[in-house]
Amino acid sequence: MSYPTIITYAGGTPTVTGTVTLFDSTVAFPPGGCFHLLGQQWFQYSIRTASDGGTGTGTITGSFSLDAGTTWRPFYTSSTADADDDDAAATGDVTADEVYVGLYKDVRFQFTNATEAPTVFEVNLALHCSKPTSKVTRGHVLHDNDAAAADIAVNDAA
Image (tube, rainbow, N blue to C red; front, side, top):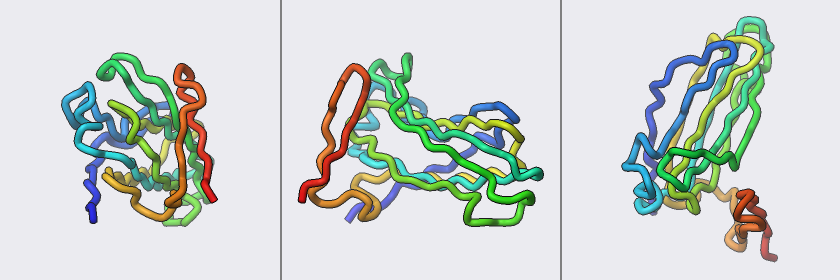
């Protein structure tokens, strides 16, 4: 059994159109593959955003680097939205996912805000050496359709 590595986010609240880095393996570990050599396979996050007007939106982008963080290539995006017009906790304000990162030397996840500055920005992050939930089945196969475009496809074996 493996246990998660909890990551403490200390990046602050994004501005109206600002971008904050949630996690960067070239900062947390020596760049150039140490992240991968430590067996980190999954990046897990939960982000709660809320704004006074209820119109806040954002995008979480995952990127990988083959050159120790000099050039980043996006491979993952997910959007967030504010579910209501106050700062009260609401399930709709939370965006969560588990992202397979085991095939990359270095990864970086960023949040880019749009529309309205968040008044609430709660971030929970973790790294896992094995899949954290049953999201991926035992027969799940990941294969590279186009290495140059970083296009990863998923097939479920029966």
